[in-house]
Amino acid sequence: MNPLRRLLNQILNILAGGCFLAMVALTCWQVLTRYVLKNPSSWSEELVSYLFAWMALLGASLVAGERGHMNIPLLMDRVKPASKKFLAVFSELVACLFAGVILMFGGIQITSLAMGQMTSSLGIAIGIFYIVLPLSGVLNIIYTILNIVEIMSGKICLNAVNETIQAAERAEKEA
Image (cartoon, one colour):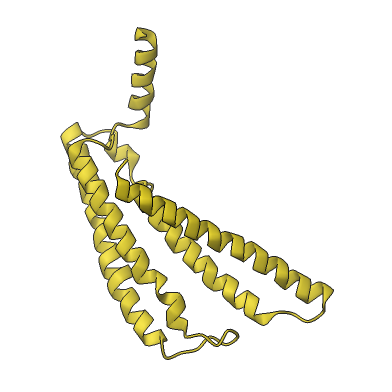
């Protein structure tokens, strides 16, 4: 595995997992303050919603790195290997374009607009929480470039699931 991909995967796993753990702890705190202490914590609810967005976008970047985004296997199963490579690269280019235009460009625009607005409970600029949009865009672009390089070099297998299972069964019989 590419060292850059390995490093990004480790960092994103830690960050997304950390967001999830913080969400669980804050939700437990919120339940405790609301039902036991009878004094609900408003800031924890707001922070959990922002952490959820961070976790989702960082997790989506991980999925892009694993090429787990949506595809049409019915089409991929019926085309020739050269066409499979073309379609795989094309889908990565579409994902890269989306990451560049929507996440990076749009994310930078919304983040800069939101820097002047403060959160109601935390008193922090909302733009701080929106930074994950362009960050996720950059990560997705890096992953799509890595995916394209590995598709072109043949390091990523484009065989259908059934073909892969059949090849594994043939290898077992031969051994």
